[in-house]
Image (cartoon, rainbow, N blue to C red; front, side, top):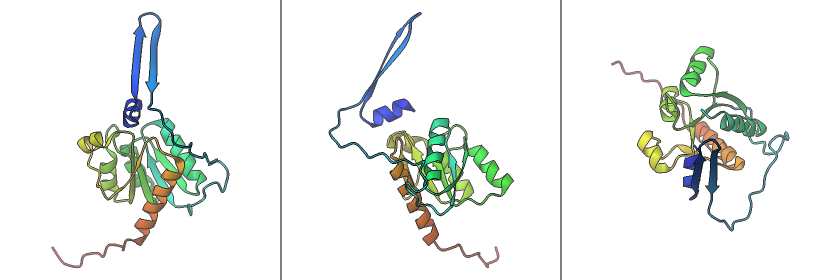
Length: 182
């Protein structure tokens, strides 16, 4: 949410409402003295090409964020499919029997949470959220060892995290089926 992002950045929101005239929102952020981050054009074919056509399932309930993530990851060389919530994502995986290499999901969503979706799919996962750590830990259990991206994020941070998670997943040995009878 906007409030969560503003609070996380140390800012505040002032709201003034006047009947018959409307509402005015003022968003304040603390002054920064850091250098601006260099923008990359992720629409050019080789701007940040790191992917090898791995398929990433993006699950994000905010449409604008979902479209941005799809554009960034597609521009970075990944095959991206997206859904608006955990239930639809799970149904897509079951119904279409689609191969997915990585799940990139919002933590807190209506219905099924990101961690619950990750547990049910068993896919390597990257979590993202605009909420503070306290809110996340109170509403959803995210393993500290999982990959995580705070919103708002820089495109290169998102791509780096996805790439690291894919590399880590590729290094893990495949589970050996149990031969012991129960």
